Image (tube, rainbow over the protein chains, first blue to last red):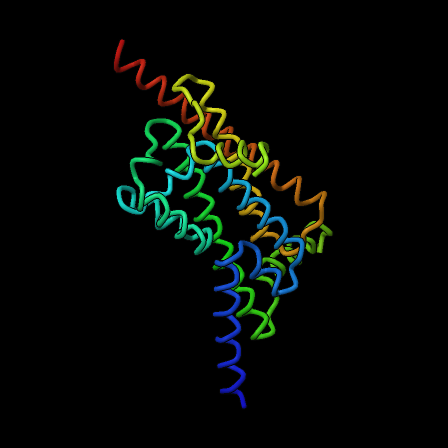
Length: 150
Length: 83
């Protein structure tokens, strides 16, 4: 019985992780953390879109900028579609100089921030499965007790 | 396709004109805000508007202050080497 519950928890963690990758914030939404999921979605999508606005979709370059591309694809698997689009006609979408730099910074950091959110959502799913609290809530309770002079 | 939709799509297939002047450093601000927001949203156990905004503003300001200090230190170092 306990074995089955453990397997269910691992399956749930995988589903949360995949959802959090496909749509930023969806992992937290599944964990009923609606405020967090809305904030994550808006922030990551806005950052990614600002990167595309600054440098165009040419900043997603799976051929000449592989390292950046790995970070960018952490935003969502849909970024791979943009990567495919730009790699099929590289001369049409090529971008140079400062717009390329800024676009890559924005889109890659948005991807890395989403990776942080994926890890956080999976960890929260793990804590829910083992009936534990948020890792920072114990610390906050101790702080409140300290402030109250306890 | 409407003209509006055409202009919106056009913005994403042609890069913006961003120079190498000091004004380009302002692109740092929205990115720092995004980092502060996402970091705090994963770290705070409960999210209430007041405390969340306060925490984000503190983190955002501290990142900007430290970047400015490091920039001045590097500028001073470069000036000492050149002069």
